[in-house]
Amino acid sequence: MSSSLLLSGSTVSSSFIAPSKLSLLRNPNQSLLLSRNVSRTFKTTTRCAADSPYGGSNVPTFPRTRVWDPYRRLGISPYASEEEIWASRNFLLEQYAGHERSQESIEGAFEKLLMSSFVKRKKTKINLKTRLKKKVEESPPWLKALLDFVEMPPMDTVFRRLFLFAFMGGWSIMNSAEGGPAFQVAVSLAACIYFLNEKTKSLGRACLIGIGALTAGWFCGSLVIPMIPTVFINPTWTLELLTSLVAYVFLFLSCTFLK
Image (cartoon, rainbow, N blue to C red; front, side, top):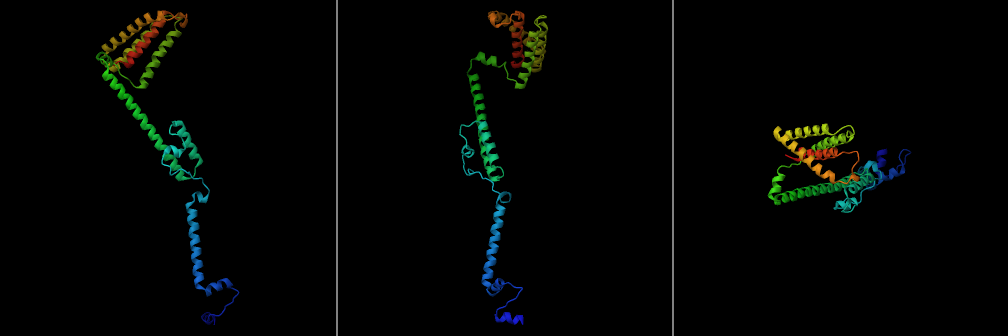
């Protein structure tokens, strides 16, 4: 009987079927249109939820991601120092934390400026070396011959030897009331000969240079120290002590920079 009622198109009322659903059953086109709208709305909602970071939370985005100039992108002057560049980068990363594209844009501009600064420093260093080499080549023959005996060791070697001879000088000053600096001078001469022997691999040459440096330092100290006004010299410091300080300087220079 129910099948005959549906085929005849008569009105059906039942306590188990709502009137709105019955109207949809009567109008198939309206039912199809409604299903399409529901499907489109579901897709749009799903896409928006997936696109928004952190489940749709409101994360601020960097407004200058499309700015090509790295200085303008970071909001600093083209003459900004490295400290200002670092400060701007850290501030922007903290402000736009949580947005991946914004952080990549900020980091990209920062890396460009960092690489540019490195290239400029490298070019400046190369230019200084080239200028120095050119000046040496244009120098007189006697100066070239003199420079052939000079070398520039690593800075850690320079500082270690400087500390050693400065310690000898301080030891001599502290021990000046008890006696002369003969022992400290002897230790400094032995250290100078040891360092020279390491470089030249010739003990005879090392002894010759070391004794020559000590003699030259002592001679120059004997000439220069009396010319210094007594106002600038401690009254307890003797001529022998001051001359030994000059000798320490000559020993340091000879064992550090001579070949």
